[in-house]
Length: 439
Image (tube, rainbow, N blue to C red; front, side, top):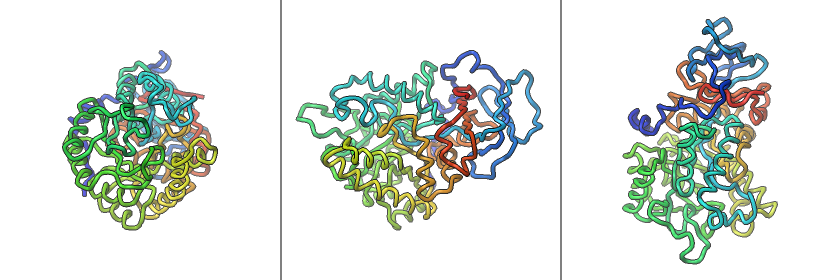
């Protein structure tokens, strides 16, 4: 099966051909062109690192890459990273930028009835900046209330605030009473409205997909199974029938949007893969049959190992209690085992952290956990660069350090192939040809 790929006309409509729109920057940031001297270049393709590399950046794009001795443009600013390793900007395919992270502030679990929607977006401004500081120059935001992720995306594109490139889902879709609904409140509190993502039956689902697209969604996200943090559902139980999932995926693909399916349990995972989703988020209970289905359909796994680690710790610390704690302790070890099985099975894997379950700006640890659970450091770096760009449908623009690509670059002090943990502390970040961070 050929993976769905958006057309160029769609990419233009979404603004993805305008990725060079500058974020807020100082006069110094805007200076250029740049000649970057890298001690080592890991270009994101999985190929051998290049020692003593030169990268030339003009008008926000990479115009030359090679060994020392490249012709330098007149008036170029020299950036000396000759004792650093340079990589493509990192990509996180599963975040929730707007709103509180788990445990943030008093009564965090009731934020939906305590916080104004505008507060979600304002917190998103902070979280976006922290994410870019951590070297993540592109993210996919897979669910937010009141379209706050779409608003944040638009303000970053317009240069009003600084942050990574965002592909936004708007509201996640799900069944009444399921993981993508809000449960546990008396009737009349937080009842879903049309466009909020809660839909039952093919007709309602198609309507909800169309509403998310109408309101600016770049991707469609839905809940194929229960989850850890929701009330009243088992973590792995299937949500949506095969017919409903097929209707959702067909409609999303007709609108040229890719589909991400939250799925922990094995039955829901398999039905979602058969329905043609582009990625499974979490994928916590895989077996050999599921592995074969992923490979048959070309489906990506986005494992969110940091989220599993975080909820496990939160349960031990008493931040999660009751059913939420039970689900966290049940699913976390299974998620790690499934990831190892996926790596051994040769699945396509893209980095996704689920930042928002834990504080933003820390998700570089996802690389570390990938390497601790079966990947080589190079495989982990590819998952967080070129593979994630392929999943998001923007591999022609970002994900590798190549001529013609947007100049999203990160530098670290040391060799991440020997010590992957150093990617959690980038010393240099360039986003769309502008210096965001330089130590």
